[in-house]
Length: 427
Image 1 (cartoon, one colour):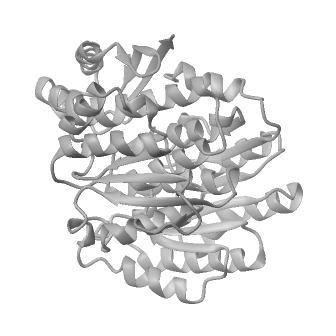
Image 2 (cartoon, rainbow, N blue to C red):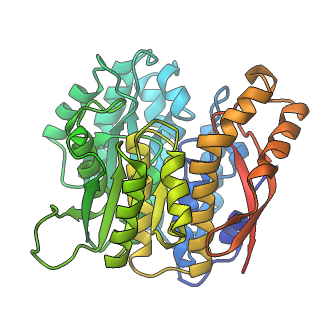
């Protein structure tokens, strides 16, 4: 089974700080399994994460008994971060169509209460309100979520985040979320999101000190418009994700308390060359993260090529362009927050390189080249795998702080949407 070498070193070494963090991700995708663990490991912590083969994919849900057995077998010395949909339904895809009753789903979640009682360690959890029109039993999902609110009120969870998934126009999820938020206890947050939430919980659990962030947009007027998949303006999404990651948002143009700990630059359209120059100027003033949200699942190649010419990507605290606006905002903010307390320089450079290889090289160029070369229904074959490796070789080596070569790559769900890969670097 494919596993990135850097990821393996993070899981097996990484004992600079006492206490292991245990992760039960939403499913086996790299964005939901690999990325949150790499973010959590930036300080050299030990990260215990469910093996990919035990998690759900597009066609098969996770076995909750196997996940529970895995959890019980882990040494306990730190918090548990868990996607409740993985245990209750088998994963995000399965949460939309699972035939389980409310009681059956709750029975699958019951071992978490036992774990909390047995270990005394905090649990940081999230659950999603499913997207429309895929959800076949919204009433069941909503009732399970209400019961998780009760658990949070009882202290089972240190924090519970309730996120709604891909809220296209007409989705009832925003109204459901608003109703849930009305009577939610202080340890519950409700906002649009899904794939990025485990990374944000890592920021909450592992870098608990509040930080300040200023958010700047390449197109401030457009940032006031409602964005796809969330049903709210981009400005509100940025605030949601910042606060849920443990930041206080400081408006630009204010000097109260001095400079912010971080500037999040959101590229949401306009002149990419001007944006690159502005990012370079912001970097001279302090820490900067970049979320490229102009398009969904697609980085702006002109922006990133200009930043590369300026040799700026290696100086960023984080970058994200891989998913929806919320996906990108959440992972950029979470990654950056872990860096604000100081991190291992080698791990940080390697994670930036991985983000660049995935979010810019793959999303903006390599995925399109692969789709042109191989029909989608032939990707999950040895020939599809060979084509991926051959095409990917054209984009490496990659230079950030270190120089990285590509040593392996695969399509873990047998489709072109995402890849997994192994980078090897050296100074």
